[in-house]
Length: 450
Image 1 (cartoon, helix red, strand yellow):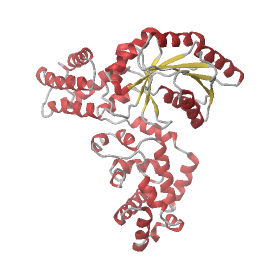
Image 2: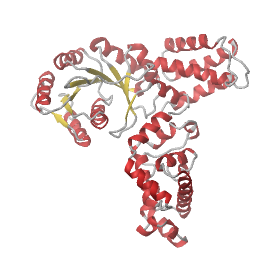
Image 3: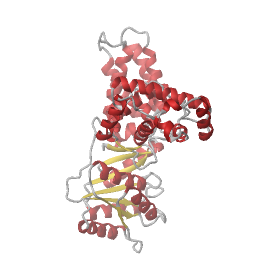
């Protein structure tokens, strides 16, 4: 995410390399490149100009600490300003009512309905809520079917009325259904359009008036750049929504919408969609996003993702097995499963400081571990439990069974043995050590890409 912007900002900071202090001349050169990088990312000229002006005012006359170089100081100043531009602090949802209503708005194709399902899963798993999805898109033929499928995937109920063409009446009936069936969050998916029109605005305003939502969220496709910002402003002028959701942030996103939408509509970004899977939804942290854009990684988010998959009892059993030198390929596969649940591997790599740049140009498939799992699946139960049995002839059989080369099988076994030694030394923390090995370049050497 934001790879082009990150590269261009890194190039801008290189102007200060070799300089012993901050001067008006080298600051001007650097900020000229920063402004160019922002414009290329589809940030408006006015915002890019104001941004660099603020950074320049903070930079000129600053004494560089002995522990910092001019380039490092400039990175810090740009990071602080990026954080300020994107909203400073994280903004949560208002879910304090007995039945909290969340109204979802946006243009057709923005990922609005998919986000509705993702939000239901988020509230169910992370907030212990009992959501009800409401299908108020009565125009798009497949909209109701799509919401029903998503509801089934995430394990929540959906309220529909195919006989009605009145979204206001459907929303009103859904609230009554929620009261009678113990739902404490109602998420209303409204109709989108291919463009902003008066009928659409009137309709969603009428739905809002009936359901009186605690949260109105505007969903926008982050790949549309400044068009997204303009659309967000038009909706906000009419709906006065509470927050923004940026979808498709894992795609070819230049970053303009994420960087500027807060300053234009003065409403916080609350969530970002980072993939197609239903759990690929993250709370938006402006400071963490600024760090990722500048190639600093996002260790805090990485640790949080790991903790979500952490099972205390399994960790205790694994620690005992490691202590007894009994760690085997069955344990290894289980650890891979936990890493996969954390999300896209390349995205996880980008959270490790310095790894984003190191992984540039490396193609990693969504199912990055499938070849590793294929090799392990081709082993017998005895071989998985006792890796020392894997002699030359057995390795050839495993290679044939998995459709991989013998050298790849040998490489996996070597990495497994190296990892076992590290884990034995550190006594436990299986997934933590696995991530550490990935950070050192252990796993990417496997055939993860095409």
